[in-house]
Image (cartoon, rainbow, N blue to C red; front, side, top):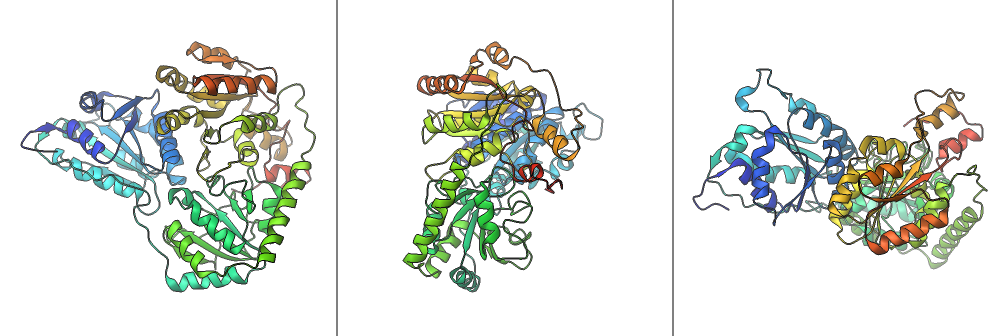
Length: 571
């Protein structure tokens, strides 16, 4: 948009964001951003501002919006405290490869170096948690800066980018064109070299026990069909990382479920440990994803790794074969290059996996919650009644291993979102707001914890204000249960700094205006969740559960510790 009319930088910024395809911006207003907010007020029919109650929470909302929609999430903060608060959210997004653009207003250019209130070295502040930082030095440069920010967020390995706009740049007036082309994921469909693909195909075809491990790169590339097609042609079982959960339907006969140290099904770890060729797709393949580099081991199988970033392909498995490029494109290249598995081989592998799943389900040990409720039973029961298209967001603590292992995704797609880039607490409470914005009309179920509620309870005000159909299942165990379990297993039960008073979380939720209760049993939980999904109204259920060390979740190193292996896992 131009035409000889001068506009201020705030107006130009808003038009540029709209041109880049931005529908929602999550943020908290501050002194340096009032010009921008005045411009947003003029465009409420074209871009929607979602008022957060904390800048870190605003970033978490944009993060989950991006993961659940495969679009760029956009957040906004002001200088000083607003910028510093945002850092905690950006670390997760960078580690988890989430495409975000953060708009950070800043002090006047002429105020730099004067000790002005909120003055911060913003480039240095954001350098460790974003892939690109740019200070926009003139009002006329805003449209190009926005274009470059969205391009950087979506190119190569996706990640967060910050645009820093001094207040005088937002106040300046110019006549400038603001036409911007919306970005998309991935920005390019780069193939791997024919030679590398041929070598990878020959390796996979020769394997007696091939396996695939899919990470979030499959989601960002929308490579679900191509993954299933390659798996079926090779008769190669597919495991996923936590971020890759849903890369293949978890009811597919070749699905292994989650692999690794957190929430894996034991038979998935066992299968990967015995595989003779493993194809990693869009995953860091770190210690957590591979159960301490035992599933698969570093010195065992042939390893092939598809990654959009050359430096990450094969980093954790020296001597592996890197396939650098877009996941969907390379999976299709491999599908055309590998031979069809023999029918008897395919039948045998599918039968083996079916037997392993059956044994695993029938071998679930009796569990005693000592009169409290069991997260395993709760999540299993809710998963059976939830709509197939429900979006689930969970905290990194108690909910993650149970959701990873027991919440089955019937159709490929990212429908369970768990933050395992950095594992920040307080993620699911605001994150569910981002999911609701991305999927209006769909039921959202968020599993949170008492430690996280104490960090991010302000998100409940937004849920009520925006009338969002979010059901919160709040696991209340009066402790920082994950750390307490580490102290229990590896530090001879020397508990310190992990306990607090068990509080009435339902009363807190009611104080924000939500319907809330403390169910006495799983049947009451199921009935309440059904009612919440049918009415599409906010709901908060305060569920009292034992601490993790009292009722162990499916975390492989912890199970091993109970069995005598007390060597603390290395992440």
